[in-house]
Image (cartoon, rainbow, N blue to C red; front, side, top):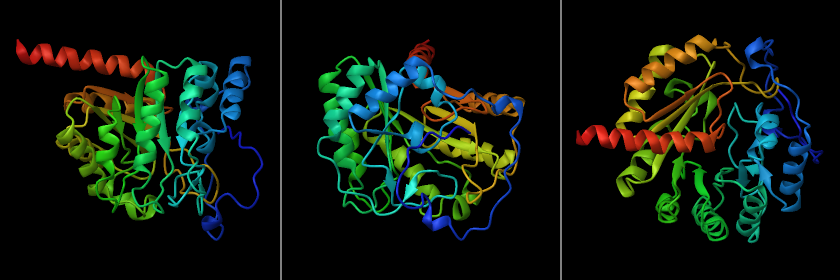
Length: 319
């Protein structure tokens, strides 16, 4: 795993300091990637820094950062770099966040313009400290990006807005092209892996998006290698299809530090192919399932495929 964080004061994960060390398994060859550092990568990094932005690519120590930034594709992470949740899998700092930056939506729009993005993914930390969970800030960011970049399609990867009534409606009214919210793992893992979230609340959030605005594509993703069984993954697929989710991503969980949840198993590429076949048979418009798949990995290419898949499904239903 390549980590490229700049120095910051204090421990990154104070809530995990007392956790016992977990073993770090040696990664198989299919998970090894080149360290970043190409000229285009450095240009992308410079644009992010100039606009005082954060990216999930860096904060979550994504293994694909070198490849994506070399293509000038960066996933914007808004509302700061400090999360109010403490998920056992996540490398983002936990703590008390700073106030929202009122200039951030405009700065994201400027960065999208400088990078020349045809499709942008905007994600965020969880902001349980805010009355609306940050929904209005997300909506404003969508609006600013669209105003400066009218041809750019917009994908949001949102928090769950737990106990934030009406929050998702604010985001939906801004009309993102894709509304993504990750289930992350199967229900049996939630207490240990995602303790601040509720599986069926997350499902209901995705279902509600479709009910309120059927034209918006919905998307969700999970990690595997956390001890889940194949039957649990297949049941999760059924749950997502019951919520009319269009697009599913499945990737290998990679452990950020010894204080995080341990990788129970490295899932071989052929099992990802099996999951993809099952998911497509259940009716998803699009499925990305590889060891290195992440929510925003190849998101621009996938959005084009998603539109084509919907058009084909519509033609088939009429014939």
